[in-house]
Image (cartoon, rainbow, N blue to C red; front, top):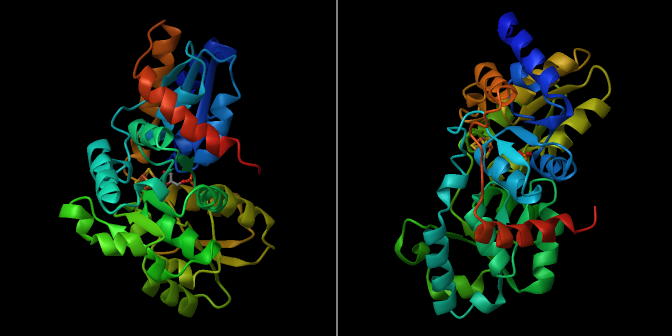
Length: 353
Ligand code: 13P
Ligand code: SF4
């Protein structure tokens, strides 16, 4: 549905009143009604860099989810304030790895005699204290656009990787980009004693994958790929690496949201695509590229509910509060967590490319 014209006008006026004091970041999975007010859009890697590149902005309004706003707070100057228009915009995947669970897992690795040779790598989609855990233990952060380069770095530093919290991104990158075998991977389930794996299995594995997943991307199925290929002749299937390995194996292209957008922009007119990522992005791609046939990979998969919590009323409220001199929904990371999380983030940002 079109956005409420009254709210559109209020958002426009509030942004104008704030001028360069405010910088609005929008993740690609955000609603159109929000994206229209973003000063920049991007995937989580690009937005982390964009947040760090605006030291002049007093306020960073992050239209995305909680872990992204935390990362922006870590990467911006102490006097800059990061605002998440709805505090309920979390991420179910990030919630699947809690610090106490990760510390238990690390103890399990130590008991198996492998903690010293293991590098912890966390996906950007994790809370700041998990990033800090990685920073403290010689580890690093990755995103879906740089997971290969980050894992290559990690394997130069250690013999094994503990990959948090998305098992699918970890497995897909290890197998398809680093050439490891599926049997080099073991899944650590934090809800089971000892992770549900034996010390021998941990010692034999190269990639120790945390049992977490995205509740949106994890729902695409290999059957949907077969179905769309039968229905649309010549269709190319493109999916995000948070999808299950069986789905990714059947796809023609795999990549982060920035990669997906770039690929569609460069695709020839008349080409057909079925895309397995968040629905707001797929709908926007279809609307922006009427010369290409773009469909959603699987009809029963829906929007990311938490990304969708950031809507125009929340954005207007956050911006108008700033105009009135009130900072609402500020996201702050405590100094100790920030120091170590920044180390892990900085190791990622320092990698070439
Ligand atoms: P990116 O492609 O930005 O890493 O997006 C994945 C995602 O699920 C963000 O929540
Ligand atoms: Fe989290 Fe998945 Fe939503 Fe991204 S799309 S915010 S990983 S639940």
